[in-house]
Every structure is written in C-alpha cells, then in structure tokens.
Length: 238
Image (cartoon, rainbow, N blue to C red; front, side):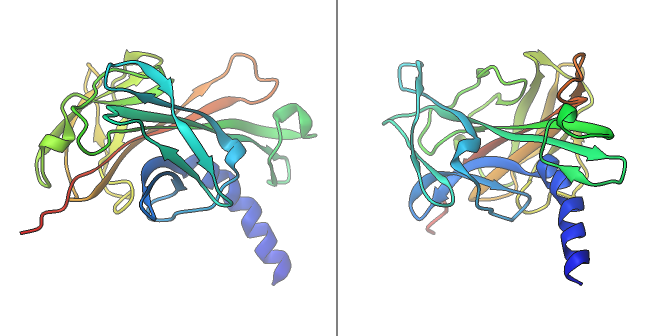
C-alpha cells in the first residue's frame, strides 16, 4: 500500500504543477499569495515567488513589499494601490520512459519522454481601487476592461486575454476557479475578449491557461502558463 501511495504521488505531481494557480486574497486579515487548485489552499516554498509588483495611486509600477511565513507570503499594499501582480516559477517536470515524473529539467533525466516548465501569474484588484486595465507584461494575462468593484454578484464583467502581449482567440476562461473550476469554459473572441458573470459577492478568481512549444528543447519541450485575475467584492450588510 505504501508503494502504491508513492506511485500515485509521482503521477499527480506534474498534473498539479500544471493545474495549480496563484491568486491574492486576505488570509488572517493580511493580503496574501495563495497557491492552490480550486478550493485547495496549499503551503509552498517562498522561493517560488519571482516577483511582486504594485501599481500605486500615481500609476507607477513599484516593488510590492512581501513578508515570508513558513507556509505562504503576505503582501503589504501601499495606500491607494490600483493593482498588484505576482509571478511564480513552479519549476520543471520531466517524464521518463517508465512514466515516472521528476522535478528536473529534460536534459537531467535519462530516457526522457516529455518535459514542461510551469509558470503562474496573477493580477489582483484590491478593494477601493479605481480599477486598472493595463497589462503588466506577463506571457499570459487577464485584463479587466472595467472596474469589478463597481459591479455586484450576477453582473457581467468584460475581460481581455493577452498572450505575449497580443489578444488571443479561442482560449477557455474559467469564471469561478475556486468554487467551480470544472464548469464549461467561455472562449475568447478574435479580439481576445470575453464576458463573464461575477459569481460571488466576495472572492472571485478568474483563470485561464495555455502552453507554448519551445524551440530550444534542451531543458523542456513546452512552457505552461496559468494566470488569474482576483478581486473580492465587499459583502452586503443589509
């Protein structure tokens, strides 16, 4: 049984590396970077964080101050922050001819069959933000074309998906990644645009993923991108 359990972990790890996303929301009253798949909220090593940036009230991109804990990273937001963005590097995963996955680059695994490098991105629009509809420059990015904090649960939110800075057609958008990640995806149009319904009067995490083949396959055959847009609408106190 123990041997079977280990095998199952090895099979699941690369799938989780692809399917997991990151987003920003409050944990114990502190804005924090969450790493998970759907409703899961998993611990991670702080060295996965590549960068954390904030847009201040003047529209300048500045480093966001981060506080590392044993299980996650907190983000200290400057006053009147318009948006925050973060990048995670989830590493390389390579499968060998026996079907075993290794957390190594392709050239480091004898008899490798396939290999991927998995990167995570997120944009967070904090409460009381005036909205932010410009790209941070991620390979894959969700742009909110209107301020979600002026909307409510059940309202439509217009988005644009950019791949390498250009609108991309036909990508499937998950409108409620945390609560219903298996629901049918909404496809982007020729302008990379899509309209989703805001599902929650609280935390909303919108997600999209894709992969791109690499020309230089020394380290990996492909790069996998998973990006989210998160915001938390204020609860009604009626």
